[in-house]
Image (tube, rainbow, N blue to C red):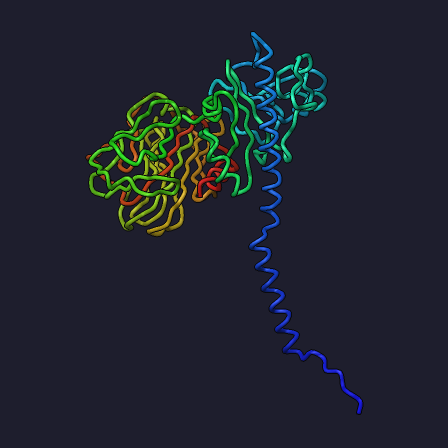
Length: 410
């Protein structure tokens, strides 16, 4: 008797196709190819920054009076397309670079010289005539190396030095950038004085609340803007978005940051992580009030994130987000760029509101700044929830920098 060969039924084929689709989706989730590429680029960055760090240390050992470069200059691995030969400039035709801090500038070389190790490359050190040769024959550049992405190598110096690279992958941002001893959670930082990069990044106030006890919150930017805890208890030191945070009761607890001139820059970025315990009332995350101050970053009674400020004509302005929820960590950031006359509000790394703000003035008066309350405690609007990782910069961070900070600390 002839046997009939049985094929798959339509239902069986559909079941098999469904299983294959599920397995494929799981593989993509578990083995994210984009993240693997990012990790590969980050591995190269970490290795190359380490090599540069060793090379510079060799240079220092073999020079009794080393010239490490010009102070308050950010040397970057991007060529300026307008340059040729041995010419250098302040990277004026490189589009997409974030504005440097006040009194700082960039330094670029030509594409011809970019990777030379004779002092004419992007790193201004002459390695050629050293008795002990450094472990490089060409200066490395970032695998992406574009201004728009923020991925390029950077070097700063005085009588010490720091060399850095922005990282991309979640793994390396959390394991490497967070543990290298520097203040920039988006970059690998190496060198003899990482505080140089803190200054080059424009960070002028940083309260991470990792003390875990006591009545003060240290300013990790090095600008001694120590926060004073008011009406707060030991139990208000809680687990945060990153390590520890402060929990505010919405009644009378706040942190006073004082009135140091470093907190009154012309351009500014303020950012923080926060988590709400309650809704339906105005509650302030940070504040520094009146027309030359950064304004008030708060959650409104309508449950939206809001940045409010007064301009030089004493006209009030505000930017707002969509409604928020309790029990969720959110990342908030505000930026103001005076030369571009722009004010921006960010939520979770994304721009949510924007205004052309030609009449904003900053830095004309030094005013008290606060965390968790309006500019004067008598006005209230106490925050009810947790706040962590508060930062103030003396420049307007770019959208990619805000996104990177969010990704690095989420």
